[in-house]
Length: 164
Image 1 (cartoon, rainbow, N blue to C red):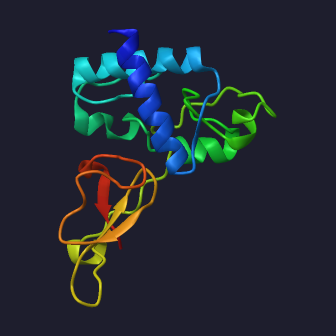
Image 2 (image 1 turned 90 degrees about the vertical axis):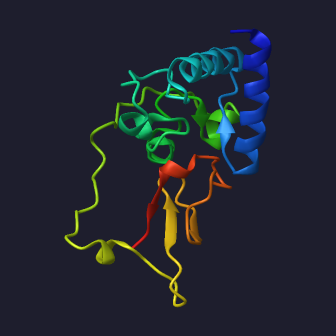
């Protein structure tokens, strides 16, 4: 893992975060360590599993902890940073507040009730096009299939679900 790769990833994520209204931790050395962890996990598993959590190594089982994780926004709202402190609130980014420990939410977030009929789960526009929701950031789109990448948080297609 080269420090150049970590630096490039940092610059990319910083640009994408700012464009989407998010902030990266202002401690650049700390963030570069996280970038190296993401890149290591990408080489190991083929995806960016959170470097601060144990991954199963099976994408379907790790979907909730692929960066940006499913818990990021809830953690930012409640604690001011995500679990690994890569993403932080504006107050922390500006140095007005220090990050605090964030408890693990994995396995504790409520799941939607399972419906008996798929038709009840699927939302459609009046013209019959399905509506998709990004489970990471909540972005909604109406199209036959979800996008390859979320235009807001850059999550992959498999992070989308049908919206009802």
